[in-house]
Image (cartoon, rainbow, N blue to C red; front, side):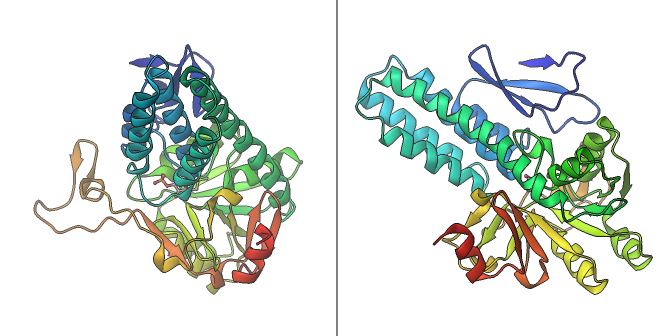
Length: 354
Ligand code: MRU
């Protein structure tokens, strides 16, 4: 069901209303600001797959709510049917998108809570799982604020910060990761301006980052992705900050396609390249970036947009949605536990205390 949002333009990417999940439909922003309502895990998985909700931390929050919704629909069921139904929810949600590890992190956390609640009735377990989903979202905002405070200290008054894709409030439960750093710097009194790569092919930069910044009167300039090198060569970029979908144990960073190109350009021009990275995005089970699964999306995203097709009919297309930036190009990871300069296997292990 479509629900026109009221006058409020507050970015509440996911919200729990009237015993259901509502998510801003990010496919139609900025032309329309509206929420879609979700009542089952299948629907949430579909919302993730079709990019109603996107951005690594927001996907994790949505998946947690998907599990909780499934448990709620099964609260009158027998223990056996509850267990079978919940397993199905975990499976369908895990298959929704492959690259952002926050999805699997959130599902693993929900599974641990489920397993630790076996002494309770299924109705009580449903309540416990819903509380955990709320907590994952609330914690995400706290983490983003902590990262924001650490990251803001890296920026100088007057900095012009280039970002790629959308790692803002819309990509999280609130505040954002990369844009959270910018928001925190602005809140601390620094004059920061943003250069937003439009981010072909899905246009998260043009449609979402630009919209978020305009909403808050943070100065933002939109460029097409192929303009970044020129602006850097002209001395118009002071820092780059991006988010991430998965960081490998050696510090390699998977993020939106085009990020690698920006990192190479930043190194060429001596510009710091920062990655805002909640600890939930670090995947120690993946040794280096080569083992991170890269989602390949539909050709139609490259050949056109919505109803308009501009590419020749029948042309072959590649559409990898993410790329990997080698750790050596990353100036620092900004996490909720502090800033990790020159990320590598050792200092990431130290950060996670392993
Ligand atoms: O395909 P998307 O829009 O889900 O990709 C999002 C990104 O690549 C973000 O930069 C990343 O998830 C970090 S969001 C805080």
